[in-house]
Image (tube, rainbow, N blue to C red; front, side, top):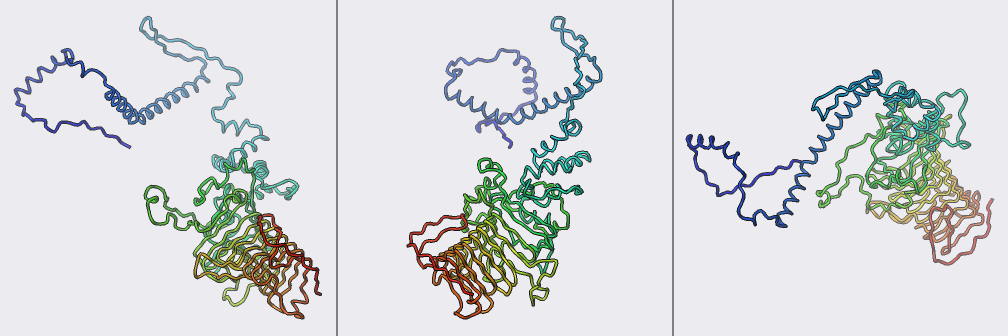
Length: 597
């Protein structure tokens, strides 16, 4: 900023022309004017410092200090750099030449004289390095160097690896990768596989197959693109997982712009896990919730090298206009284009302990996670889903487990050996779909749900359809589902079940299916549906607690019900431990043990 001061002049100043003779006369009188004594005013009141004059003088001094401070700081910085440069130039020849000469002023004679100095040098001064990197590279103990590099973090290690070949070999050594894996929680002794003798790149492979979001990558799709092959099928992209990959997501709110579709090859598994390395007291400096929940972290440098051409199809970072300033405050329009999640209630308190993945999009029938082949593990995360469309069979769900169609979209493409059908294991997760279903396993897929909380879904909480589909549900709460889409008049209407088995097999053990809009558990097909329930609560659902075909059908004969609490108005017991709900209704009696062959 440039400040300009202008001297005010009187507007009534008269102008008188000056002749050459008058100009010569004034020029001759200039030296005599300066030799005269300064004029003094005879009025003492004008020379007196009044309070107002002192205040104006102080204010003017402050303003001038503000104006001149950048210039003084710049001049001081130049002077300091020049002094340091001269000192450095003088010290370097000092080590090679022990004798130097300094010119000192003699105050008595007012003349300069030369004085010979003998600098003292000890035996260790020759080993002192002016550069810390040189000391770390040459003289630092090799056993503590990985600890030092791990302390600075993977970003700095990535930067140091680009200095030269020597530092690149140090930063990419197995000792450094092992220390990083142990300190960042990517490998745990006694839990994960031990290193093999002949595997020279074991620790580097462990580090690359377990990226941390947002430490290694700023988003989950970018981490998946670095570990998997990105491919496209019928205009939609998906990640082909050819090796076991586990994406570790730190607690916080992570936004997705589109679905995360995965196909695993052979015995490879794709996992998304909650990764809380630091305790709650020490995690405040690293928690993503310390930033604005609508902002996205910048892409950090990563030590994980891309092993395929995944970056070409991976989501490219977009530059958005910053919504700051008085214009956005006074504007009547929305301040965000695609990140406005004000109508989605987010639990920020639980997000500090559990990673929360949010997908809100205008794309029709777009799930958060889509499993087409192989196995996907989702552990300890919270999924919040909202999209447009009403196809709750083929996409409008938080987790969609379904094989893909062939190119003509006439039939389902069933994976053949050594590949496996799509399977999802959901453990200790919270799942909410504000526009559709919670989890859908269809067309020969399977799901395993343990200690999870499926709630507030617009449609069915858990849906099983298609011949050969399987669902195993253990210690899970399926509550408050089928409430409809309250955010769109064209969305799903209210009135759906907690667990709906159209075709396939479902096993519910020690679970809680209560307070759903329509029914608790429904098995529809009289020939192709099998239901086994034991030690579960079916309480307070809308119409029926348990809906089954008529007696004598194949579904009735092959199903079993053991030690269940079935009551229209009673108390339920939470199983997952992820929520606490107090219900003041009456306590119902436990159901009798009944078994059907």
